[in-house]
Length: 189
Image 1 (cartoon, rainbow, N blue to C red):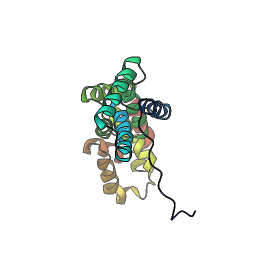
Image 2 (image 1 turned 180 degrees about the vertical axis):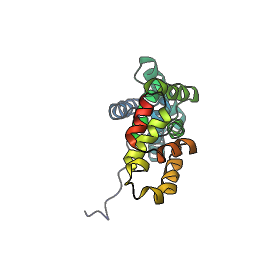
Image 3 (image 1 turned 180 degrees about the horizontal axis):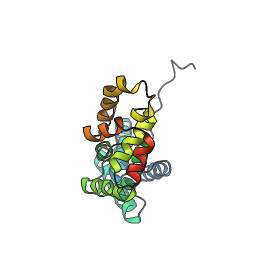
Image 4 (image 1 turned 45 degrees about the vertical axis):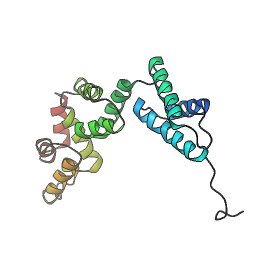
């Protein structure tokens, strides 16, 4: 058979054991929030229900019970997940605004998002400035750009930092810095 005549495979029937196995496999590969895991498992349930006509509500109850069990056992912990994602995204140069948005998209509760983002102040005294500097380094903006090209690229660099979610004042501080080393020393103080 060639690829054009091959029939698409039907999804397997979503049994309680297969749902649990899928959840454990997903958790083995990815850190996630409880709500995001629920979304992943419900997509599997939906595909199975369309193919096999199984009861969606019954399978949704299985998913909810599984999420509850994993949360009680500590296998799923939204705060720990949020704290890890916040640190990871901050190291890559994401603004607090972008971090909040991403975590909310993953289904993390607002109070947990705020608690995790507030934890950044324990890492560095000026987390927004540190993240903006890291983004500028990665994208070669402001002090990381050749000195001759900086004046003509000023507006473009400011716009790049604004699109990343940084305030105008933070972006201006990065772009107008004499050197990256001086700005890094200012952050470390």
